[in-house]
Length: 156
Image (cartoon, rainbow, N blue to C red):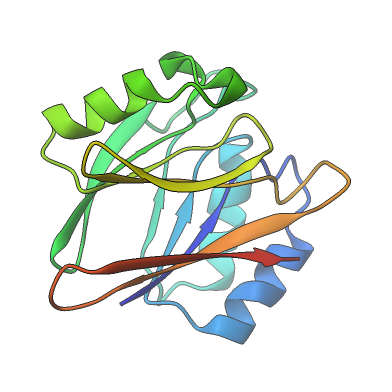
């Protein structure tokens, strides 16, 4: 299973749409800022399931602040991150929340900085920013039938 993961698009989705067209994922995940971007991406690819959460820049959000989603054999915790104090790559609260939900993968955004590492048995991923910044990035997550996870940060 392949997942295209975006965060912090801030109304700049053209490159995200191109990335989805190129990689043809099984699922798209948007980690907030701005949730209306997630809806616009989903409209362009109605046959690809979309999971999304709201971010700190989403006023009157419709989407949840966090969610758990099943990606093949792997349960994933998704959130924007601002409610878990992820600034300066301090992800202990995020990892704890994922562990409490029985998740093997935790994905977040907010910092506009990429991160990919394993902490406490949880694969932690921040795809960076797809919308604002000097370097625009997204993540391709591959989940294997045996529960293995490989994440790669891609340039937009």
